[in-house]
Structures are given as C-alpha cells and as structure tokens.
Image (tube, rainbow, N blue to C red):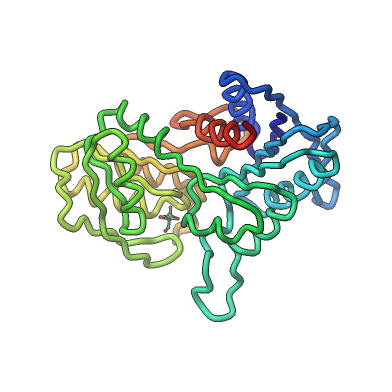
Length: 305
Ligand code: R5P
C-alpha cells in the first residue's frame, strides 16, 4: 500500500507508514508536490505511479487552504489507478457546523463531507466534534478516537480525576477515565461569545487531586482556561489539559494585544497541555504532542488487510 503524505500531515503520515511497516504491511511513503501559483492558488502533483495499490491519503483540514489541497490531492491520487483510496482526514475542519442552528445557515459539515467523499472509497477521521458527522459522507466513513493514546499519557502523569469542561464532552471524559481507571465528572459551561465562556465547577470534588480537563478541540483556549481556573479555585492540586485537536487560535484582547491560546492556558495555571498530531504546526516537532499514528495505522491496516 502507499501512504500519501499531505503537506498538512507530513509527520503523522510518516509515523503511520512506519507503524504499518512494523505491523508487517508493505507500506511506502509517497510525498506529493504541493506548490502555490503566484496568485496563491494551489498546484498539486503525485508524480509517482501509484499503480493499482491501496492508497491512504493523509491530510488534515484545519484551514481553507488545507481543504483545497486535500481535494486536489484526492484528484491527483485518483488520476492513477488505485484499488481503494482511504482519505484520512485527522482533523475534519468545518465539522462543528453539523446542523442549521439558524435558518438559512450553510450546513458546512455536510458540504465538506460530500466534497471529500467524491474521490474516496472510505474516509477516516479522528474525534470529529460529533460522531454523527460520518453520516454526511457519500462513502463509508469512520470516526477513530484519540482516547487510547491520550489516556496512556494522562495515566503516566498520575492523573486521578478526568473532567469535561462541559456536558457535551462528558462522554469523552468518561471514556478517557475508564481507559486507565480514573474517576470522571464534568463542569458546567456557558458560552458568552466566540472567545469567552463561563464555567462553574458544579459539585465536582477536585480538592487535592491531579485533574485532567479533556475536550475534542482547543481553539482559543477560552474553555480550558476558564475551566482550569474554576478547578484550581475548587482546590485541585494540579490541572492538565488534553485535547485531540490543538488549533491554538490567537485571541485579540480589548486593548489590542494578541495572546496565543497556549499562553492563555499557562496564565490560567495549567501545568501541561497535551494535544495530538491531528493538527501539525510546521517546523520542529513540539513537546506535549501525542501521536495518533498507532490508531490511524491500525484502522488503515484493517481496511487494507
Ligand atoms: C465546543 O463545543 C468544543 O467541544 C470545544 O469546547 C471548543 O471548540 C473549544 O473552543 P475554545 O478553545 O475556543 O474555547
């Protein structure tokens, strides 16, 4: 099989190909050419003849540019004669708008699912905001979970209470805690704006405990920062944050200063921030990143067995 490394997921694609090879699969890594025309449009070419191999195309879609690259990569892969094409979209951008909350809104999760489903025989993604998003794809699609790898990392750090910052992530907290025998609970969140939330500890018993806040996404960090403060105020000994997707959007404060989301978390007293490699930042690998490659490799291996 061939693992095609999209430019937004080069490390995860390489780690997935390695894990597949270690598990006894004949997996080669293919690096496509992805460039930009002077006007900013993307140019994509898979120069290597993929023959009739099974292909896993790995490309995270955390921005509009990444989405366009993904669609062009699918077409370039399909221009050869692959047997099956598994489109692995570790972070499925636009999935949060998974219904029309207000009349007349675009249903972005369905639009993107339809678009990416045109050239794939299967789509794999990791911890979409809601698992039901897989129903939007015109081909079989599966939501994988980063819980096993994040739970291992939290167990290594002596966490004994896993908390969701809101009820929506309570099931995630429970699954994470169950994976290593910790307790689980959830806080109560009210969203005030795109960047600000209010979080109440409710009747969570955090006193003296090593707590981990878990969520699917850290975007502006507002949810995790506010929840961490509430837990520390409630007497938690230490608070870590763990999320599958680290988007880390900058926040502009009222006085015009720009605060990176990660700094917001550290300012709130968070001891460590853990995310996975579903969203990669260019440059050297960062600390606090847990790879989902074992999860992705297992799913791709099963698919192409
Ligand atoms: C929303 O329901 C998600 O699960 C996350 O809680 C949210 O996207 C986090 O956003 P932020 O980091 O901006 O608070």
